[in-house]
Image 1: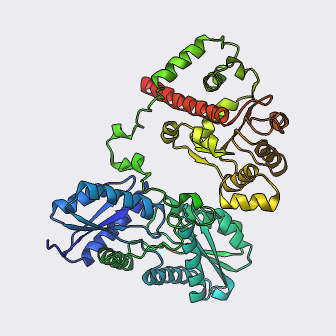
Image 2: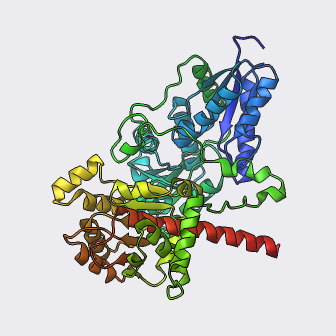
Image 3: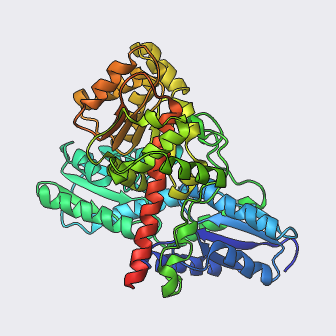
Length: 524
């Protein structure tokens, strides 16, 4: 292979659905057929094999000195911006003699717009009814990501197809992560009053999500027999898709890979995503890399690493355990209570603690399920154990210093801590654990949102310190029967207290999973 030539590695996501993997392989064959003598390999981020690093090793072993990795995804979101570049960086370090390049995602290429038109026309032609597009609504369904820039491309696609094809209206929904979700979006589209709805999944391949879209379309048709609901095909392993991938590979090698950087949340401060500017590139797919093709014994989850305290911490906990009779306290509360003694250096600090029924168990399970902790101030966030957060994959969020929080606080007459709590309610809904260690106003906002707006966070830890409103807000929280809660009486508390309680719940969660795994192994 000449030094001016290059090998192409098509980096796919991978799927649990064999249909999706098979169609990806068909696309790889189409790509090879059009690449001439240029080597083409493929790899997957998740579930299927070969993995991306195995694909790169393959072309390097065949003599490639220049390799371009092309994301086998439609839109540039987390996979194309973080996961795949992180793979590429690791490969560059492992193979310093190889020249690596990265191509752009497919995005809204004119060939793909034409292919969308073809899928829509095919769906219309299969119908026995003749309906003018002036009386039809186009619903474009995207994958849905955590990247607003990628999600907005679906809206752009819908508008371009609406105007280009003459639909009376268009509507956008998503199969996951972003809103509205498919079923909600289709219901909303049905209310617009058009005779026909054409559902277009903007997806490359078949899979679990595409089947979900078609299922939702069928459900809508059954509920609304007065509306004709047509399900258009997804893009599939079409020759036009292969041509775009070849173009992206060429652009990548030539340094012309155009990414959607102007509104990229990792490069500039985008409203609502300011904290992610400069976030390091790291993959999140390691646990399912090649999962579906591993040996059967490897399908078992890895042994859970138990929490191992520092020797000084362990000795402190031994002294605390022996320093008081803990038998009067329920077993599920003892980790939090003993760690609060460790934090405060005071055996009497736990006498005023209040746990609502099942609060510890509920909080522990919420951390395993929701994996998100909202705090009123950064001191609580900082006090959470990094190693434990990483093991449980728990995210933390504190909005007290965000620009939107400042604007909300000024416009609504709130403290920033209270405004941050209101934003957490808006952003995350019920799927969070709330830990308040500083601001009585934050607790008051929690109480108001729970009572007046039906907010139901999984657990509220309210342990602020101070003399202004502190006693009163804790009593309000204690009386708030709608949510599990942990608080105390009086003026004592603070950010270390709130962080300690959450740390204790996370440690208990780790022990809970470890115990379950041991029990499963014994039963096996």
